[in-house]
Image (cartoon, rainbow, N blue to C red; front, side, top):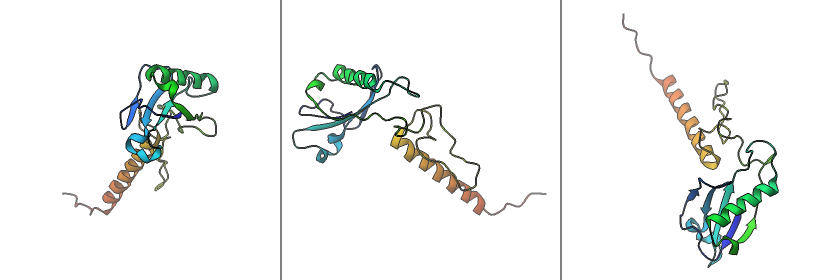
Amino acid sequence: VNFASRTPLLSAPGIVTFGKTRRLCNMATMSATCPELAPPGWHLYVAYAVPKPALGDFDAGAEVALSLQDLREQFPGFDQARILSIRVMRDDWPAQRSCAGYDLPRETGVRGLWCVGDAVKAYGNGGTQACAETAKLVVDAIVAERAREAAPARPVPV
């Protein structure tokens, strides 16, 4: 849910994670770190929610309604905010390539071919952060492998 408000609803400059909500997972104040994203006097936000079930079919309208209800309960001024867009990511356009616990390995079994991205993330990770982290883990593995290959052979003691 992308929305804007004339009054600040959240002062945190990063992402805030929610624990006791129906569907709302996290929310970011985009204009706190990039004020140029919003017109003067406006605050820009993006909120993320996860449907139930997270894998498989779900009623998009009902899930959006529950997400908006969470936002109203968490932020009393939310009803005065302007909703800019609501995107339901699923099927051919998923939010992430896999859910925690359903990830693939980074190693493929083919020398020099690795997987990176949000389908090979570490447990509890996701999205862009997971893409960056898995890319770093793969680069570290490649560097370590090349260092082992380049190391001179040690003589075997007799």
